[in-house]
Length: 640
Image (cartoon, rainbow, N blue to C red; front, side):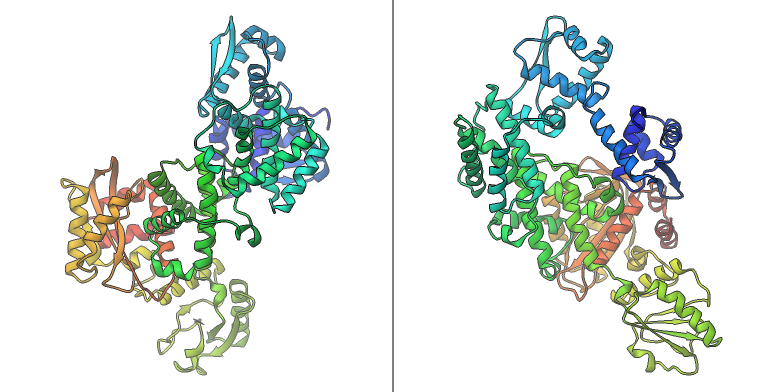
């Protein structure tokens, strides 16, 4: 095991597949910048090298999954990989060494001197410097000077510290000799103030970097005006406590600028999970207003917010801490980002809309990592509002071929439904419409002589469980949202749109003119109220209505109806609005008061996202010349 030497790309594949349950060839290819053929060869090499320890297996339709066969040996391998990152055969450690040489030595280093120190070739070092330059540029840092006469790092001390913390901390400070008494004293202060482990660990990194740079005569000399906003906060006073404990153990006086620096991880921490810590957090009116704008842009109206008060409050706290991080440049990593984007596309789309609102209101760009954390909250909100088959309490099963067959049907349904759902068996001669009135759902293997009030699903004695599960969800939605069943359609958009709500738009006129024509037509037919157009214009001033590539989603409150009104307009030839090309316009009227939750809106978002991801479907919908054609393509989109 100790003699096992893995190729650098194989190591990267191991690291990627440890973070993500399934990884497609395309994903690995994109992440590593090589062809899928190369990835296939790397996987073969990995499986050969790790024979008996671990393997990558391709699960059909999902991607490659890492299976660990010998846990102790695999953990040793991971430990070795992490250790090897600190050697010069790792690109990350080379960049760390270069940065260390440029900022922590008094002499000016030439290219040849650096190459000699690192025991690598001149060409290799030039390539590493190019990589370092790209990484440094995002922190407003740059490598200056001439390669043969000497190089140095140019930029502000605060930016340099952020770069170190975000990129090379583990290489430079893994073995930093921080006094155990200082560490214990900081732990005591942290525990007294309920700092959670993630915040504490990040705080310790800030303390180590601050002490190292300060003691090496690289203090924060320029006072950042933004940082001074933290001076009167509880977070600053907590940092002051920590500084006092450090000064008791070291013969130094730490200036205000350095205290402000170690205030940052406290002020910009992740939202605490315990209520005691949250009790001390003040949510400003600005944050509440921001969240209202986000919900308005997403399409969540006041009654839905009131029904989900806990979600609203939790997101307020999250935004409070997130805005602090964005304002002061504190970056956080989201290890679950890929999974969030893949498994919760609607939640992530809502987070992207929130990010656009934040950028517009505060001029702060929200990173993908931060969007992923916002998506967690929307994901919880969506889960709480989903129509769930597990909520079914009583279902009736009607069978025309004997009790044995009925029992077989019942056993299959138990695997589909929640274990607490009561399943009652009947023959067709036993039941009446009134008798079935108390059931949430009715299954039958025979055609009934009457139509029950509860949703009815016709099934065979032996059925496809996944298909029946989808049917349960479908009929539950139909009943919940009072949608008319016009055939075996699974597209919610298709069920919401009728011939009145389909528009072939004029590509020779502007996007705005076409939307106005859609609104006027729907208003005349009684779907939208007279003030809808004016409210839509006001909403458009607050933010872009472009939902995704080629798709616009103009929406606002509709006083005409207590149900969602949806229309679809198609441009035979794409038009431009706010610099973006549009082919499809989904016009949405959202009721101010309704007797159902946000799950229908979520379903609409989900279906539009599916359409947006399929350029062929977008083209087919845009070319639809009739309502019947449109219906066919919408159904194809949901089934694909």
